[in-house]
Image (cartoon, rainbow, N blue to C red):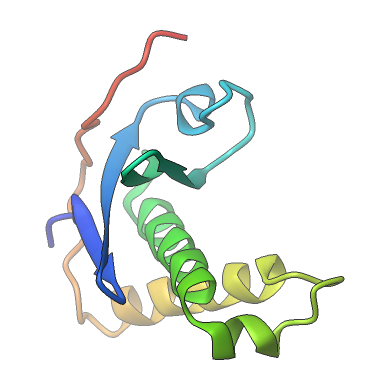
Length: 120
């Protein structure tokens, strides 16, 4: 399996960048993020912190699920605003990553190259 460098959801394309540190993930250079979706002018991007392959896959799926929720009004309406979608997205992404890997549906690479480096 090769990690994706872009994804299209409901006609909107998001470039996916893989970075080496959590401070590079956040567009405001704050620490602690594993992944983040950002809309900058006409470009939509997802940044993912590279770690072990299964955790990186989990994070990619997690961020794509956020995009799906944001772009689908029915899914967005199914989540109570005061609760948000974070817990649901986090759990579903983890389960999907584990399912894909444990059933042998994907062959995760041993190493994931960093595609984007930012000076922090």
